[in-house]
Length: 292
Image (cartoon, rainbow, N blue to C red; front, top):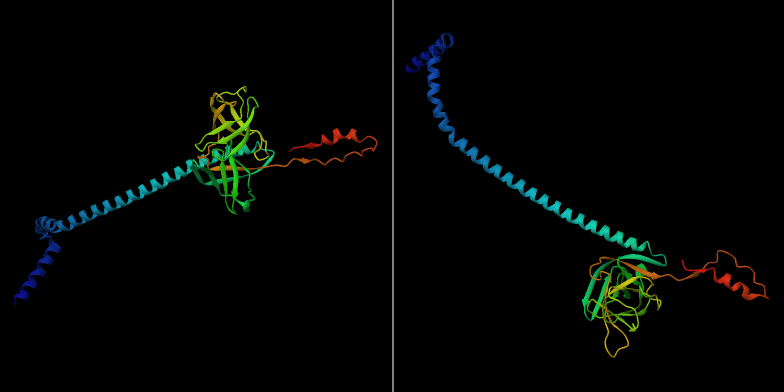
């Protein structure tokens, strides 16, 4: 019975509200009263969402910051490589500039893979060997001057005895005066110019170049610069110290030279030699001999 009364009353209120808007004011009052309660009830949810969003943003920012740091590191690494490539280009240009002036030797570029600066043994190891037709006694230079000569080879490498090694000697001449001598290594990054008589004109700063005597080193390449000249009593020769011009322990790329062999030019036929005058054709025959 009570259910029927309540149901009838509810239907009546709904009909009255629909047709007469009688419950509008009451509904507004009820919603105004319930709204703060709803806000309080949903506050924990909003706090949870806010905290979750903040932590998510912090993690995203950390991840983005790490990615930016990684990218910056890669950019710096590439920049270092770019600077290294620029330096390599400069070195190769210097080598090619040197190579462009060479017309009596065949050459090839090699890379230094190891060096020894021991006072008793100063040498370099190159990445070219017998497979690249590298042989003993070939001259090795860098962009500045002679470094040494090849003394040992393997199929894939070769050893260069530096001009500062105590066992190394090279025939040289003073460029300014043409005075010839022998340049010997001291084992301490310097060389000693020997057999220069005291009546010779020699000064500090004079350039020493290869003389070509002996047939091992090509003539005319810079070797060292005189840094000290002493006149010791009781000796017929000056005591001269010289510093190599080549970057013996800094050069990464070097050139391996091989002395070209002079040849005769037979492009033109020699005239027939009359038997009664064989000596008249000797000058013209010798005149056709040249070094390329």
